[in-house]
Image (cartoon, rainbow, N blue to C red; front, side, top):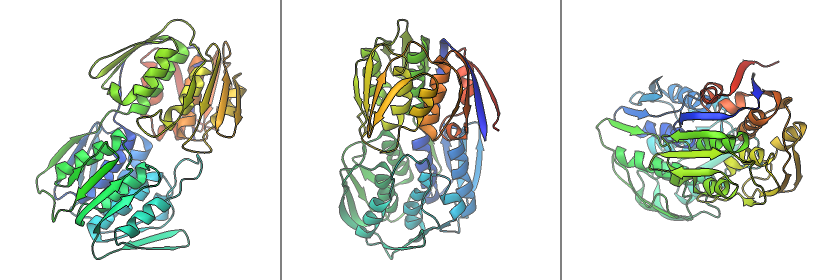
Amino acid sequence: MQKLIIYGPAKLLGEIEIEGAKNAALPILTASILAQNKVIITNVPDIADVRHTIEILEYLGCKVLFENNTVVVDSSSIKRFTIPAEYAKLMRSSVLFMGALLSKFRRAELSNHPGGCEIGQRPIDLHISAFRQLGIEVFEHNNRIMCRCDKVKGSEIFLPIPSVGATENIILASIFCDGEVVIKNAAKEPEITDLCHFLNKLGAKIRGAGTHIIKIEGVKRLKSEEVVHKVIPDRIVAGTYLCAVAACGGEVVLKNVFPRHLDSILHILKNSGCKIKESKNEIWIKREERLKGGQRITTHYYPGFPTDLQAPVCSAFAVANGVTIIKETIFENRFKHVPELVKMGADIHVEKDIAVINGVEKLRGCKVFARDLRGGAALFVAGLSAHGVTEVMDADYIDRGYEKIEEKYSLLGAKILREKGE
């Protein structure tokens, strides 16, 4: 395991380019197995989850080249439709290969329930229920999931909650459907819109991405020409930078970012005293005075406040003036970072799905342990603002979603070292 050593407190100054979105790149890479020709995907973050996805593509038989944040995928030699347990356990998004493989082969097999961060119950019953509504036979045995069908039938599927993964899997499974598949109460996240743009470039017929009703008209075949696609910027990475500036103070310009994807966090930070200006692809943020607490923040599905930013926001308001209340509505086990922040001197009390943050004047550096991806990012942000040395252990969690985080924040004036963990 890796550890990050942060010498605080830091004042962040300068400009930084936001990397491509993890949660867009992974489903797009998965969807590349459907292409009739090579696909070139640019602005792909060099993170652990992308590397794991490429390993799965290569195991299936694809030829993949990844360099300088560009992935070239040639799926012409793909021959397998089974995801082995060792790959399935690595990350949650392995389940998306089910939909893509069903479109490709009418068969798919996941040798283990999908892994990922342990942030609460993340069942795939919505995926399985949707597959069955599409006329797909699903068999489950000893944690193994096997799917097969002669064809995917057109149907109307209502999702009880706007699940991002279920929405993506239905879309991927429905590209060659017989008729039309309509998803009601579909997730509206920008990453889903990006996936649909990519699939439409391949020749799919998808309408309604970004709304609660998505329609997939089945096609007989996809286009034969080579496709190039640029992944959208990562709004969670951008939001983490915003939280870091809010916690530490300073003045930073985020470049290659879509401000409209960050409306909820920008609104919160403006109300807390940060000065923020937005342009087409940039956000300028400056924090001079101590952050003001006093807000009630509730996580919600997009365009609400993202659960993936709950932990970094928690770190920012840990050093704010006043009391801030955060309610987590998406996952029931997403406050694992709080005991670690308390070690650093934070005054935070959690009761079920609510965290009450009594802001303190400063945090102090110490050894803390990352328990999941976004919680690890929260400890990183806390370490930047803390006085003294913070060691963030098990930083491999952070590497799953943040590209070379210590190098990028060093460009803004932070002092960070990376070492092998104990």
